[in-house]
Length: 419
Image 1: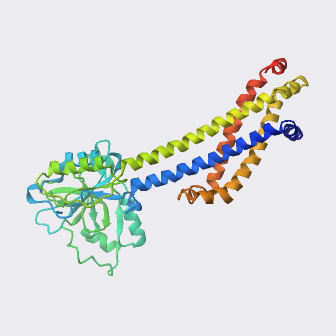
Image 2: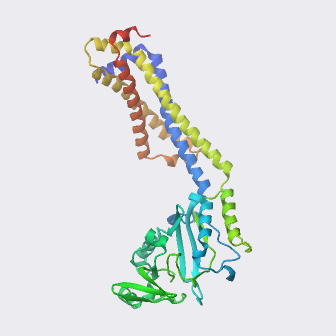
Image 3: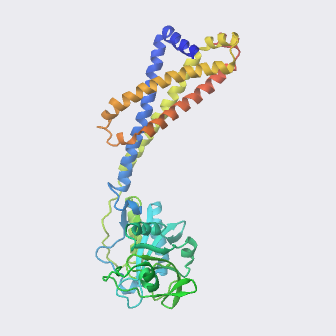
């Protein structure tokens, strides 16, 4: 450390102007690093607001809006009341129309003579296949934690293969199983009188529960208490179960005008004579998204320029100190020890400058920038400052070691002759 402090003192005394230039350049580099990160985070947050809306309507459920929920017509006319699996291509085209913004597809179906719908279908989509909404059980568990008599009651949810293959498995309303109801709930737990009783009672065979749905036997793999409906795979279901309400899709992000038009076109293709009036949806302004993306790239470019500037400064320092390095080597200083002295010297300077910049940034610069970039202050925390510090120091340490190693390999006489 004595040699490190002595070198810094001599450098300030002998090359005051150059040292001042190095200090100013490093201060600018560090502040640009903080600024580029803050500006990037600010515009990313504003971009997300453009993409996802000012506030998510259902953040816990993972979507921001719903497409295809008709306002004038909800129930499907008789001519379109077909078995839900007959609309498989419609579901897929609708999912492809919104792309990776797809969150879930929902529709209801009814059995013959049912006053209300008996079945609800919640579909996730991936790589051309639909499977049961994966967060369903988690959401039902959350309801059950608030009220032990509602939500998920018993069993498990569908596996992907069960749902894709249309296996005869079912998540049934617990009210259809009198024995299970009596064993789990006391006499004060009453059934919601506003809902009709479940149409298909559960029965036990061995250690498993089953329901007979329109002549087809389904194994009850789970029971829940939520709306009194049955959940079954939409493929290979009895033909007498028909679509009751038009499907609608929840999306993770706002759609562009092109995506919205494609989705509406899918509805019109399969239901050509229906005069839909869709619920309003806030769409993305492509020019605004382009503006935000441009700013993010500019912020990244500033960070790259800062790193290049740092590398040039390190190279200049090594060039000015080459004679000292040659003398150290002639006097018997090992290459490793010389490298450690020079690296420690620069790292000490950088640590002091980083501390000065950080204090100035937190106390004065960041509050002032908050008036220009509304989300910039929220982008920083103690953890972020530590990460930025480590990134800055690790990159600086790596660059200096690479450059110094190249100089140390040169013979002392070559260093003395170098211009």
